[in-house]
Image 1: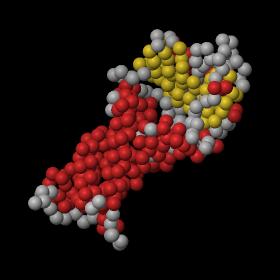
Image 2: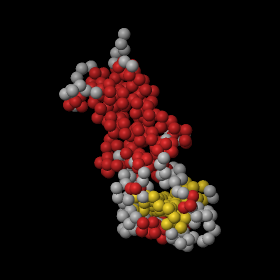
Image 3: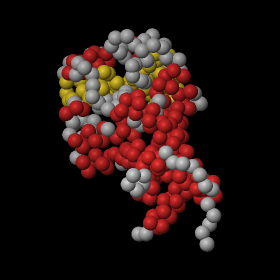
Length: 357
């Protein structure tokens, strides 16, 4: 295919999907630090001193919303708040509790409604699913693949000749308006290319993670049937006892999530983050604990996982820059803004450049 044809693919794909990409860039920019923003916005206090205790948070949540608690998740790291998931007459709710004082910070349906938590949730679902459920998620994944294709074509079209990199990345802006926009579009596109390519690849990978997991033979957090205890015997172990038992297996880990026994079952599942895991808040190390006697039924060490699991576990961390710590997250946010600028330059070229006769 001639260079001119690739240019047409690059141009018209960007024009057709540009508005969606701009939406992804803007919402992605807002979500990079959404946990810290939400925790501060709802009035959480200082990080908890010492081990995180889930029992008081569960008690406070049940007092605010009587129902069956299914899960407790840390809101951020260091831990300032806990999110307690409560089913109230089969309607899932989330109660956010201050981790230190057990003060109720918010109590809303799972979608958050019109609350501050709901605004963050709305942005998240808009970014992930376009508010269209699973079909919207598939559309986002397909759009990400087209973004990847368009970015790679743009890099090929704009690749400088030997010795021209400095002049290309820091161009002299001169000429007609569309020519000025062209050199800026080329420069910005090359600067953002690597991070944008990684973001598009990992975003699409998360959409089809289930299929990728099957293809790679990765187990993920799926537990063997033997680790789920079906029993009507009373659960004697407290939630904090289950967390403590799991942390004995991984003393250097930090607690991030607890799934309480389902009706008719007796096992807790404790999820932790070990040093070296790429996620900033959540890890994929997990332990299933028998609530009757505290025995460990199953465990998953993320640092010893198969390569397929390691790749899939890293998708989110690479997507939003967490794998490089706070600087990586700042870079991911800036890339979102730079994509907006690059797209604006490209649109300006299309509008201002005289049509070829």
